[in-house]
Image 1 (tube, rainbow, N blue to C red):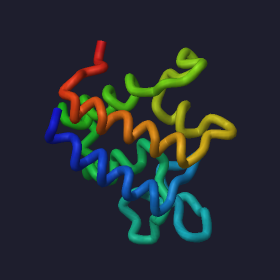
Image 2 (image 1 turned 135 degrees about the vertical axis):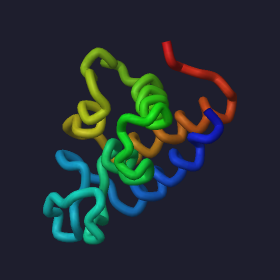
Image 3 (image 1 turned 45 degrees about the vertical axis):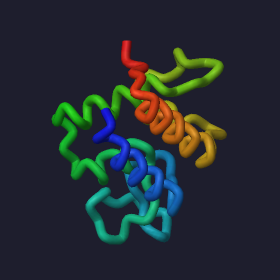
Length: 117
């Protein structure tokens, strides 16, 4: 799992520069663009993961990272989320909450614990 930490930190750096909802990526005008588009400056949580993992969504590494993120969600209503985008795109969700989730993932990785069930 330790090999995932650089990916999570890279995701966090992308989201610190620009976070969005309702799309994987947006340009400086807020228009939806591909995560691979050089104009992309904002990413959602999954868009950032896809970007740093080079859209290799079928790799075991990406599957594990996805599961770590999903299982690290701490929320009063966890059953509201079937998928990571449900968490990211929830009304009133903040960038700070999404960054805190990635901090939690790094903490889990550092402790060598798995939250995967």
